[in-house]
Length: 313
Image (cartoon, rainbow, N blue to C red; front, side, top):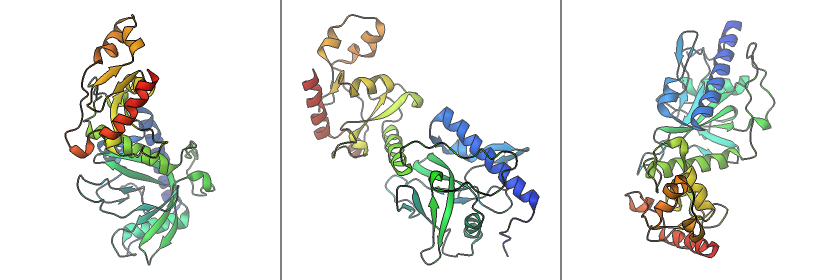
């Protein structure tokens, strides 16, 4: 029978130390890479006392070998192109996730492990697949409910709503993250939009073809604050930081036929090479767009946005 219980004080110490190290690793990596992390980085993980600790594996509920009983992370796989996601995980509120069991057996060791996390109030990592190869990481998250009839766990993704865990983290209990006012669900939607737009544009700016992901944004054609501003690829453009700012401030406009226009006063301005090559040189040029029809910029949204540019000019 699967031994689900943490046995002694040394197990507590190891478990707590590994989780604290994992949270610190994620903090450092998101500082470097941003909040959406590559699969290769997460599967490689970090080294703890000479042993490699991956943060995810082939299954959604993952316990690295170094841990005695309770999983370290849960993951929702990204949908593959043209296919539905393999698990029906879903948000039931802005910060509560219904997470599906591993299979249909409540006694499967992965499900027993998450049930142990619920009993002991042990923090986990949640990895949400944005696109193939990239995940949004949230931590610490807690299992707060178990519905055996519906084969689901309830997971709380906002630690502000929970008391600090009594679970031992050894000398280092500084594992709680700072949270912005943006809800987890909204942040997930934003990051999903960004990841899918950048993937569609092959991680390059639609104007200048810059390929450094850390310098690229997913710009909304119609702002997401408006009804037509849906977070879909056809309402997005992959733009570098410079061209995103210029687009948002109506310094450049993009016509429905995909031709770039630079605002008249900026076009006539005399300045250094950055203005000349970074903005003025793109006047009259055609932007680069995805090959798939559903991912190309929506002409109606472009027309609406271009009219705003014309009025601002």
